[in-house]
Length: 185
Length: 144
Image (cartoon, rainbow over all chains, first blue to last red; front, side):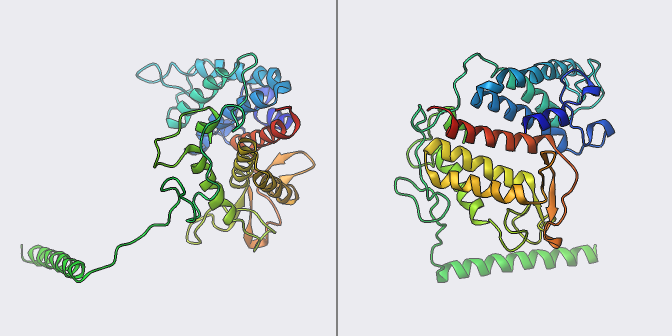
């Protein structure tokens, strides 16, 4: 899987170990969603290095040059800190947007996880303290909190009905009055 | 899930914990596992009036696979690990996956029972599966 990831998204003809969204980036037709995808691959590759130490060096052989490439794209725009999309050139490519910013941030942050012997994510037995609720979201839980309890509704009273009727009448009157005014004026 | 994994302090009593929020997502998604078409898998959309309802895509199923792996690793509960295996077992036999070249294709249509996959490949989908495998490997193969 790592082999395919590398061969597909770090094409050798588009820079030394530089991440490219190969399905759309070379064609320049990535949509808004697709323009953010490299942020996610960066993040998950770094997490892989953390969880599977034997791949650490290989992964950062790709993430480090990609981050440098991204930084080289981040001197664009009227503010001179706007990031472009194509990390295989240090000249700002003229693109900008939330996806481009996310990708640059993602790949540079991923490199902040390039720490020798960085511990893997916590589990409940290795330092994680978040409380478990296996039935969360099913409407049957909530032993210690309001987690996942089904939404409850109050009974509708005569007063509620009268109020609803009055508001409906007011809206109708406003609509009809407004229409009449438009027609007359 | 990430908040739990980095040891971020839970919200105060009375609010859902980080872990329970992730468990709620898992419970809702696993309930939507759809065997009516393509022999299993999640659809891209929940509601039939949404464009993409007739599509089973890799990243939705990769998301459930990864979340199940992470919940299994975090809690030690085998039910989640079983689900991660179940999602992968379906996925690797589906047209969404090119077993010969280890390619993750974007998705396949339910209208022809997922008989052929879209040829598009996206980086984030690879990332989601790669990390899912890594959580599984870390949980199953490395000493705790």
